[in-house]
Length: 209
Image (cartoon, rainbow, N blue to C red; front, side, top):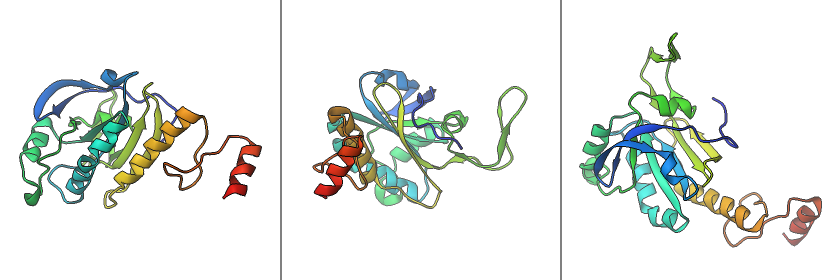
């Protein structure tokens, strides 16, 4: 697995469920020069930790929208499985009420391109994935800026749920840097001071804190 930070986000063209309806062609291109994107991967529909994460992103969706961020979920399930899970009530382990797009990566190419595909697999002579075990995505988050560049990535192993609040904090940090030209020190949160990327700026920050 190699980092994508500082690189162009891999292109994809896939099926998805958007606003409860199937979409045959869903790409990142529609957000280019318009919106930030939080693309998160999760292992599988109809599991245990995954719905808690999808509901957590839904609960914070207004906060992402305030920041001009589009949230996209992706797993290696089919669009039909996504749709069925969206019809299942939360109390029954479903994700009814989730409004953001869910991308189908049934052929595993998106997870592979983003370096988060978990399982035993390889490529044949024609470049096709060949698997010797079940393949699912790790729990991963990518923050993509309006120019389509990956600015942050986080990858968790399958048992470890992620923090949606931390994802929001990273969005805030990136937007703070873009607006003020100052970098964000450890544990930075909105309302705290940034640092000028010079030795003098670091000294000033440390003396004030």
